[in-house]
Length: 306
Image (cartoon, rainbow, N blue to C red; front, side, top):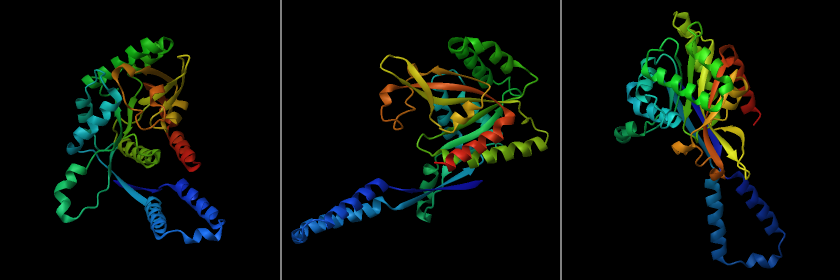
């Protein structure tokens, strides 16, 4: 397990505006000094509110191994991806929990008093899950067969020119394919991705040392994405809900997107100012496994630059 702390400071721009207003106030005529006590109290109240708004808040997230009690939380995150697709998310969740030596679930660290211990379990929400499943070795599972069938169907509909390549990769017994799952609540920051992926890489290395099947040729990803629709009805570039997945896309050997708008996906809610102009998609990526370390480093570099 590991803990990640996120520090945020609220309403910085509002504070700046208030300071500018105070400078303007100092330039006013001295007759303004005779403002009423009521006005003073109002101003004092605003300053107190501003002090609260600008208070630095630390939020701690804890990554743990998946366990049985996480079943419903993990399944709900998977359903965000698959929506109404015919993929058995219950079976997929069972696989994730059964191989708990690989991957992590993320929860908010809760510091509670003894009297609140009874409520802690209710607040112990799974906020993210990151793991990898070997779909070559687990090809006989219903959920894996359904996943492959889904991708082949959508590729036929949306990227016919790639169909032959996708079919060959998905059914090549000499190629080990890892289904890389990277799901989290939409309001969680991409900063969480770095320590989680670094931990995943270490866990896979330990598994390989034990002769377990985690030496992959490719990683397969299914990402939540959006496209903006223009006035002319044409669609623009893909926007990834998990922003770091754009870097995975850039490193991919194959990729295509398919619409899930008819499945009423509300994945963009709260994240865009003009949600009505955004159509929901899923973007499928095939990434050469040897690129993973460079991808993680690029994510770190991008985050450091922001």
